Image (tube, rainbow, N blue to C red; front, side, top):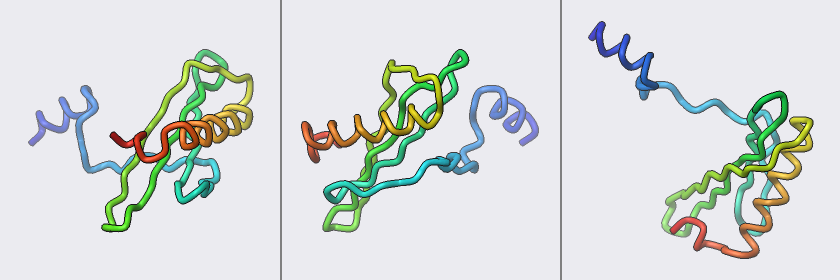
Length: 98
């Protein structure tokens, strides 16, 4: 109860919270949805995002990626994340979800 809330707050628990929505436009590419999600890191922006796809059986699978690349602006990092996601889709297709 009280201890659960205290420890949950300290250690990242509290599964009731939904993940923060990305401020960047989700884009469709060859049946996949790409959502850039750059994160601030040491005064720069780290390239990150997600690739998701809804399959014929109705299930949706998502692959999150974080790259070591850093960009000077959030917008540049978002654009680079979208470009890398398209490359991942071209190279791996549905295998990205394995």
